[in-house]
Structures are given as C-alpha cells and as structure tokens.
Amino acid sequence: MNKEFLDFRSDTVTKPTPGMLDAMMSAKVGDDVFGEDETVHNLETKMAATFHMEEGLFCPSGTMTNQIGIKCFTNPMDEVICDQTAHVYRYEIGGIAFHSAASVRLLYGKRGILTPELIEPEINEDNIHYPNSSLVVLENTVNKGGGACYTLGQIAPIHHLCNVKGLKLHLDGARIFNALVATGDKAAEYGKYFDGISVCLSKGLGAPVGSVLLGSRQTIAKARKIRKAFGGGMRQAGFLAAAGIYALDHHVERLQQDHDHAKELSVALARTSYVKSIMPVETNIVIFEVAAGTAQKIVDQFKEKGLHCNTTSASTIRLVTHLDLTPEMIDRAIDIILHL
Ligand SMILES: *Cc1c(COP(=O)(O)O)cnc(C)c1O
Image (cartoon, rainbow, N blue to C red; front, side, top):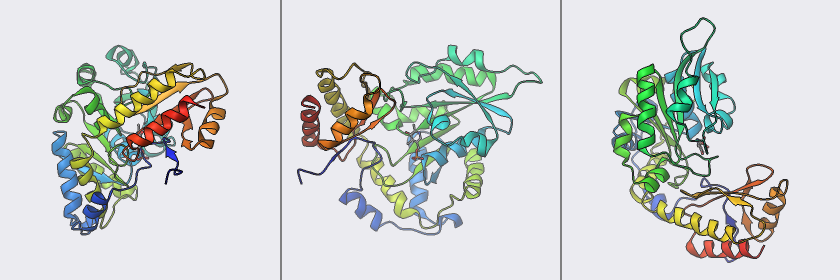
C-alpha cells in the first residue's frame, strides 16, 4: 500500500470514487442522439444553469468542446486570437486549421493572461489582404501559466472590447472551477461575458470522461450538428454524464484542498537547492525551474523514489494536485522533494 506511486503528472489521472460509481451505475439512460438520455440532459441543463448560459452540450473531451466552439464562432479564412501557450493552439493538433480552416494570431501574455491592451492592436482592420478577426479565446486557469487565474474584473474589459469590435469570446474553462474557487468569482456571472464556455469534468472535478460546451440556444443547436459530424454523438452516455453531475455536487468545494496541497509543495520546493524558481501558485498546478537541461534528470530521480511528474521544457517541471492525492500522500511527496 505504501509503495503505490504518487501521481502528480496531471489531474486527469483520478479514478471514480465509490459514490461516483454508484451514481453512474444507477443512471437513467437512453439514446442521446435521439435526445432520449435524461441524465445527459440533466447534466447539460445543470451546467448551463450554473454559468447562466442558455444550453449545454456533453462531449467526450475538452478538445472536442473547444474545437466545436471555435467552429461555431468562425468561418473559413477567419483568424482566432489567443495566447501562444493556449491549449487550443498547442495541444489540439492544429485543430483550428483542420476543422475550422482558420488562422491563429498568437499573443504573449504574462503567464498566458491576456489584456485588452494586448488584444486590440492585433485585431485586423477590414482590408482585402487580412483575415477577418472573429474570435478571442481565453484559458482559465492557464495550464502553461502554472494555473494562473483571470478574475472577472480582468475578463469584463476583454468582453467589452470584443463586443465593440464584433468578435466572439470563447473560454477554454478546462479548469474553470479551480479559478472560481481561487478567485471567489461567481460561476453565474460568467454567462454574460462569453459566447461559449468549455468545462472539463475529467480534470479537477474527477469524472472519468467528458466536457460540456455552453452557449446560446442557437450556438448549441449548431454545435450539436458539428458534434455529430465530428463523430461525437454518443448513445447511452448518461452513465458518463451521471459522473459529471456527481462531480458538480461533490467535488467543487474540495478543490481548495488541492490548492492548499499545491502551496505546500511549492513551499517545500523553495527550500531545496536544485530549484531555481517557482511560478506563483494560485491553484492546483506547480511549475518550477531547475538548471538548464536537468529537468528530465530530476523527474527521473523523483520517479525512482515513487513521485511521478512531467517536464514542461528542458528546465521546467510541472506538478499537478488532484482528489486522489491525500494529505498523507502530500506529506510523503514533500519528504521526497526535501531529500532528493
Ligand atoms: C485538458 C485540457 C483541455 C481538454 O483536454 P481533453 O484531454 O481533450 O479533455 C483543454 N484545455 C486545457 C487548458 C486543458 O488543460
């Protein structure tokens, strides 16, 4: 038991809890492509209500909810504006080009956080040579930014700019609940700022599969057709949606514990001589810097002692906390960090 490894690679590695499994096994299901799965319907409705959006669409992954959102909000030859670290750009296999035939304008935010001042000069004016800037994508929290958060106070002026310039605004909210817990902002306030929101159930919330895309009735009607075209129309998906409903009811407030654990890890890392710097810890992600070229070596040494994590570059390492890491496991990890 004591020898099971400590898995800090990602918050996607969690397994369903007994309570979640019970909820899944007793879900009422039907054919969701026929619109007959009441549990999927309940998840979509519940998530939409949480963020004050009109409707939701349950999809197999956050990549799919992002890519469907982007396709809903662009036409071929348009341009999408996002930070250079954005998941939609870096980790979705060039899907913006593949699915939406759109180009991407990359910005350089501080830890991935964009501002109206960064965005405005990059919006193309109407000119025969230029792609039409039609969409801004924000990520909250920013994965590559070490879990950095936007507050609604930062989002409101970006929304205002998009509104004035006629651009849509999409949120990659893979870890939006971490941001909500960290900032104290209200989920219900989000609906008025975004045209689309993608929320992952399989990250910090601890469900095995799935994401929900939120938008207006019209957007979700279009998104539902695109999901079918992507091959994402699922049948008795209520077994999976039930895990999402359970997660919304039981796994949101506890995210604070993951954030506290991440802070504890960063305090321990700061006491070592092999760590050069640590990004400020705001949520459940810790990214720290070691001597150039040694990140993989340190990850290998951690692994030898039973702590699994990944590099994010030749000199940076990422640790992610989640609900399968108990306080006792965090203590063991700190011991490994301090005595590497
Ligand atoms: C994980 C993640 C996604 C979606 O990933 P899937 O593995 O496709 O569910 C999207 N954006 C960010 C920032 C993520 O971390």
